[in-house]
Every structure is written in structure tokens, then in C-alpha cells.
Amino acid sequence: MCPLGRAGSSPALGTLSKGVRLPSTYPGGEIGRRAVLRRLCLRACWFESSSGYESLGFAKAFDFHAFYRPKNILIETRMLCSSYLCFVVVKNIFGAPSLSASIDSVQRPFVMSGPCSAESREQVLATARALANSEKVHLFRAGIWKPRTRPNAFEGVGQIGLEWLKEVRQTTGLPVATEVANAQHVEACMEAGLDVLWIGARTTVSPFAVQEIADALRGTGIPVFVKNPMHADLKLWIGAIERISASVGGPVWAMHRGFSSYGLKEYRNAPMWEIPIGLRSVLPEIPMLCDPSHIAGRRNLVHVVAQKAMDLGMHGLMIETHNQPEQAWSDAEQQITPQSLVTLIDELTIREVHAQPEHSSGLESLRLQMDSLDEQLIELLNARMNLAKEIGRFKLEHGMTILQMERWKEVIETRGGWADRWGLGPAFISNLLEQLHKESIRVQNEEMIQNSKVPTI
Ligand code: PEP
Ligand code: MN
Image (spheres, rainbow, N blue to C red):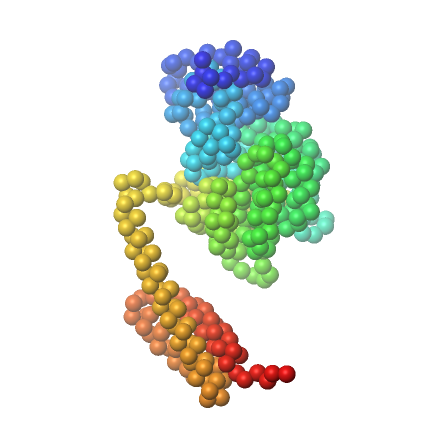
């Protein structure tokens, strides 16, 4: 009897579990054990082609755990007694309701990587092989329908790319993902048995397009990643996630790829970190990936953005890689080699999202102090606004204008000096004063309108 008392029902899974007897020791130790698991995983992939999506789930579960959590022997036990449970485990990895129901079971960062665009079978397979061998990547990506800003740019290889992605899965065991922008794309991907789909920034801006995709995905349960819209509109992003979640019946993740703006700037797409943070506070159950490649737009900035995403507690990264980045047919400036990806991931500092139990009481006490200071700050702000009202009434009685430039200059100078004494940055203080001044003017204006003698008819 298996631990959960349920046996798998798929014929392909039955075949696999019947034929498999895992030894308790392996020639070649841990490396040998991984080699055996890898072969089994590949077999599961072959079985998948004849038996549909469930056993694919099994293959993915097996692959992830065999390569990325090799110490998790529970998976072997489960496979021997019930392949069905393995499928549940993969759902778990993608955050669907299941045994422990959380992406937290995957060590951060979850890494999705591959070329911006699939260009040829050779380029896709070479990149995928290097990524699979790196053992850093959980999910392979390649765009096959490319939404381009202007016509006559490379618009993707189209449906043939699905065949290459299937081959990636069969030869490397990596699950595969591509971007969908309409219902036909979804149908083609479901038919090809892709593992994950994502919705690009140019599609998220259109509720009609998102709804069309949501309708095509209804009940499929396939994991979907929703990128933020091109421009900084949190509600539009939330709306797209809601439309997809309401229909797909599977895990939905958010992907932060920055926001487009006009003119030259440091990043290709401004990160505006407050927006993904805002999304996490509205939808805390949605895992968040960051796409540093499209934010940075340049190879040398990808690492800084990835580190920042990790420091903000994001679950994973989507980083574009290409076997020959300079030759890439799209986004050549931002793609990196699989080798550089390994260095990048190794050099990331991954801090805990939650404090270890032994540190949590110290953190708790610091947070209590912070709460108390914030409460005092708000009381002080209230007192300041009450003074602003009084000043407003005074100015009204004495026929003075609200804005007094001399006084404003004096405020900036004196406060700047006070802040400097405490080592508070001038930009921070001048932004804060700016906001306070704006609100004071609003309050004074309101006070004047209320107290001025408006003629009655
Ligand atoms: C991509 O991921 O290749 C892509 C087109 O990204 P975005 O939708 O973020 O521009
Ligand atoms: Mn790209």
C-alpha cells in the first residue's frame, strides 16, 4: 500500500512502475544513482507521448527531484508504490493544491531559461543540452511566435518550433514552455503537450486577448505564467491573472519584466519594483518570477537585476540564454550563454524569505519598535496638517497667497541641514518634503475654500 493509499490509473504509469525495481545501492554511488534516475525519467518521457498529460507530470516530477533534490529519497519510494503520487509531487512544484501545496518546496531560485526565440533545431537543442547539463535550470523556454514592435522583424519560427521543444524534453528531460498570444497558439501547444505556457507583456495589455486565451485554456490545468503589461498598470496585471486563474484550473504565476517608457534610460524596461510588490500584497498566493533579461536589456546588467529580485524575496528567475548570444535573431544584447548563467546563479546571494525560528524573536522585537515609531510619525503628520489648516485660515484672513516661495526655500534649506546632521540622504529628504508640501498646500486650499464667503443665490 502506498503512503496515501492511492494507486495510479494511467496504463503508461502502470507499465513503468511494474518494470522498475530501484536498487538500494548504485554502482558509482550518487552519480550512478542519478544516472539510473535520469534514464528512468527519459523512459517516462517516452511513455508520455502515447498516454497524455498525466504521465508527463510524472516524468517532470521525477526529473526535478532526481536532478535538483537528489537527497529526496521519498520520491523513489513513491515511484515504486504509486506513480500517481509522483504526478502529485510535480503539481506541488508548480504550486497547485496538492500534498504540501507550495512552490516553497523548490529551493529558490526556480530557474526558467532558454533562448528568446527558437531559431533552428540545432540552436534550440544545443542551448537546451547545455542548460540541462548545468543542473541549474528547472524549465526550458523558447519563443516560437514573437510579437514584434514593427513588421518585417523576425516573427518566430511558428509551429515547427513545437517539434523542437518536444525533442528538448525527450532528450534532456527538461519540461518546456513557450509564449501564447491567441487561442490557436494555445490549441497547438496543448496538442504538442507543452508543460507551461506564458502570456507576454504585449498580450497582457489587452483584456480581449487575455480572455480569448483564458477561454482556450479552460479546465486544462496547465501552469500559466502571466507577464506584467508593457505599461505600469497594476490593475491590468491583476485582471489578467484573475481571468486566467478563473478558467485554467491550474497554477498561475506572475512574471515581472519591467515597464516600457519613452527615451534613453539605464534599463530597457524600468523595474518599478513597487508594482510587483503591490501585486504580491493583493495576491499573496501567486508565486512571482522576475525576468531580469527584459528589464536589463543588456547582458552586463542582468546579474544586478536578478540579485535585486532575490533580495525582494521573489521565487524565481526567467533568464534568456543562447548558445551564441551575439548571433541571436531577437534580443541579442540581453541574452547570455548557458555557461554565464551558471556563473550568475552561483554568484547570487540567496537570503531567507522568513527568519529562522531562532532569529524570529529578535526580528519580532525590531518590528514592534518599527510599528511604534510609525504610529508616532503618523501622529506627528496629523499635527503638521492641523497646523497647515491654521496657516490656511490665517492667510485667508490677511489676504495672502497660499504659496510663499521664500518660505518654501527656507523650509528646504533648514530641513536639508537637519537631515544631513543625521546622515539622511538629500534626495530622500527633498522627496519627502515635496510630498509634505504638496499635501499642506492641498489642505490650506481646502481650508480657504471652506472659509471664504461664497455668495449665496
Ligand atoms: C519574451 O519573453 O521573449 C518576451 C517577448 O518578453 P516580453 O513579453 O516581456 O516582452
Ligand atoms: Mn526576448
